[in-house]
Image (cartoon, rainbow, N blue to C red; front, side, top):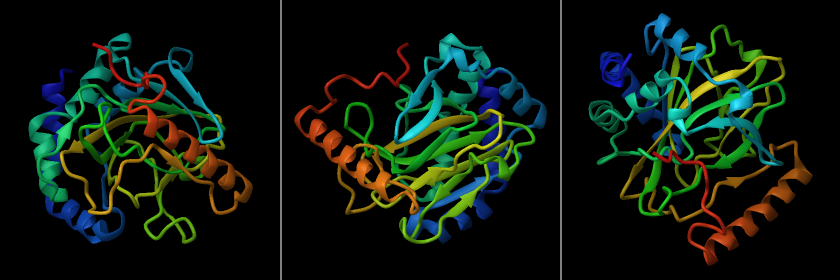
Length: 270
């Protein structure tokens, strides 16, 4: 399928549930705004997307104290369907509709897929509580929405790999959003939008299509530039201290060098 056909399906399903999704987002907007929609695409298309995900050996592994996952962003290196579905979320009508739902003016999709593309997580993978990088690759626009589309069939919540949002901070209980097959999650990103992905405990691979939307203005008046900022889970006291030190070091580097010592390779080089 081409992205135009996929984007029409995405648009129509979101449009059909627009009032419900807007209520979801606005109810949570004062903390971390989010909404999710199940059965986004016809099941046979969602399964086909999943079946064309790359093998782990053909991805880039990110493994550190902060995270463990596998990413793919040079989309012309993989089956064309993956590129088509990634960019279907960047269709003007889809972007405008989500703009209306979230009441965010002038949303901008990211053709460079800076930190976007597709991701895979297997047993032992995790993503510690964090704030996403505040800006795009050139530090011209603010990152304001994170779109996650999960495509692993029969994924059980007990497997782990679920999105956790922390609307009241890391010392209060998180909200868990299951990474259910054929589910789209849209989440605001700003100075207080702490979120994480629980560790996967089963020998299965969780697959996700990722996009970010940007804006000329931040979501909160208090927003300021920051690198991707990690913390420990509430039970990880020592790790939390180490991650805070790591945050300060990386922030210092970005203060001296706008794009870091080296350019982040995670973007689509067309």
